[in-house]
Length: 345
Image 1 (spheres, rainbow, N blue to C red):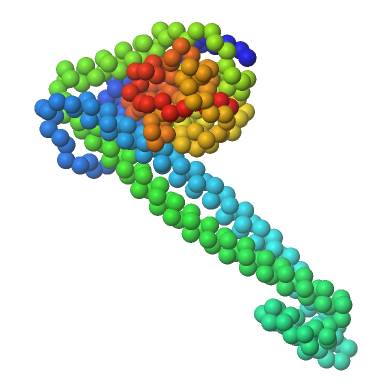
Image 2 (spheres, rainbow, N blue to C red; image 1 turned 60 degrees about the horizontal axis):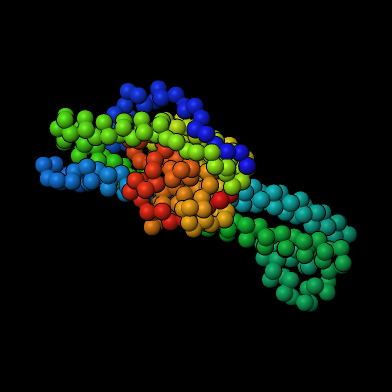
C-alpha cells in the first residue's frame, strides 16, 4: 500500500479572513434561532460552555444526518412503490379489457353468463370462494380471472405499502425539523456567548483557533502505509480538503461536517459508506487499539460514536472538528474526545 506524506493543502481563501467567531457567523447567519438565557459571561468557564455547545451541536448534527438519510431512502421507496403500482394498474386495465371481450362474445352468442358477470365485479375474491360458480367457467376464462384477481391483490398490497412509507416519511421529516431547530438553538447560544465576551477575550479565542490551524500545517505524519488501497485513496481525497470550513450537514466538496468529510472522501475512492458516524462505526474491520491503526483508517470518537475522522499517522487525526473550525490535523491525545475504535475499509 502507498505511504502518505502531507500533500499540498487546499486554498485557504475560505478561511484566512475568518476568526473562529466570524466563521461560525458566516456558516449559520441564515439559520438563527432563539436561545435560552445566557450564563453570566463574567463567570469562569465561558470558553468551556462554548465548546460544550459546539460539541452538543455536532452530536445533534449526526442525528440530523441520520434522519435526513432515512428521509431520502423513504422518498425513493415511495416513488418506487408508486411506479410499480402504476405499472400494475396498467396491466390490470389490459386484463380487464380482455375479460370484457369475453363478456361481449358471450352476450352476442345468447346472453351474459352469470359467471362472466362475476368476473367483472368489484370483489373477485368473493367470487373465487364460490366453488359452484367456478364450475361454470371454462379453462381459458378461469385462467384470465385468476390472473386478474392475483394482480388486483398485488396492487392493493403495493398501495398499502406506499401509504405506510408516506406516513413514515412524514414522521421522519418532522424529526428533521426538530433536530434542525435544536442545532440552530445551540449555535445561536454559542454565538451570543462569543459576542458577550470582551474584544480581548474574543481575540484570544481567534488566536487559539488560528494556532490550531497553523499547527495542522506543520504536522508530521510519517511514511506509514495504509491498510488498504481503498483507505489510501479516501485518505488522499480527505487530505486535499484541509483548510476548508466545517458546516453542519455539509458533505462537500467545499465544506463538511465530520461524517460528511469521511463519506465524501470514500465516495471519491469509489466506495459507498453510510452517512453518519454511528453507522460508519459498524462497517469494515474493527481496530480496537490505537497502536494498530494505519493512515486512512476511520477513527470513531466519543462514547455515543458521534464523531469520526481519519487516522493520519503519527498519533494524528484528520477531521472536520466543529463549527468555526477548518478541516485539519490534530493530535488524537489533545482532541478532548475519547477514542472508541478504528475501522478499516
